[in-house]
Length: 271
View (spheres, rainbow, N blue to C red):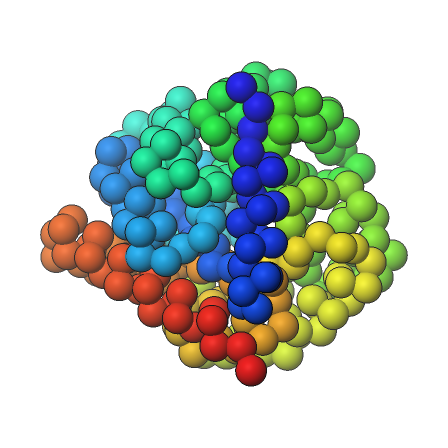
């Protein structure tokens, strides 16, 4: 079975046709449990997310802030395995029909086998993979496997990326470009700032791929701000925090669904 890069592209294009940014949600697999994580992802999509990223929990998540680290730790202590991550992608996609990507550091994929990981992700109906720590120069093996199985390879660019570097990264990527709004780790911020807008402008100068902004977006107001200049708004820590702060699972699922709805309204507030 081929992956769903075409579905991802069509959903992003549909949002653009509606003159709005797409809403992309993130949640690590296995949090709070594998089965409950599927329910949470489904709630995010039912609430208004267009696309979701399923994180592969990692013991040393260099890009992730304390909120997502806490969720990763819960998943790891629960015994999460790559098979569970693939299952989460599969069930979330089958239940909702939405594009579902995996976000992972390279080491687990390398150990599992790039070809095997791509084949399993595609068979689950996955749309692609976001690999924040895989250098473009070392990505050929993965990119070939991903292309063969119909998966997007999404690379991360940062405000520190020079223009020639942006051109190189985006030329190797597919699906969309993940623009990190600032230097640092994931988490909520008071302001997303001007760096993100400038990075999107510079990235668009070298690629026709949609540019989605993540890191620091947590409120409908911030989503609306980013939606003015980005093709997609990525929210992760805010969803995780709703589940962490909830007194019980049902309350957490309701909170996640509500937040997705509020953020979905935000990304539609383009001038």
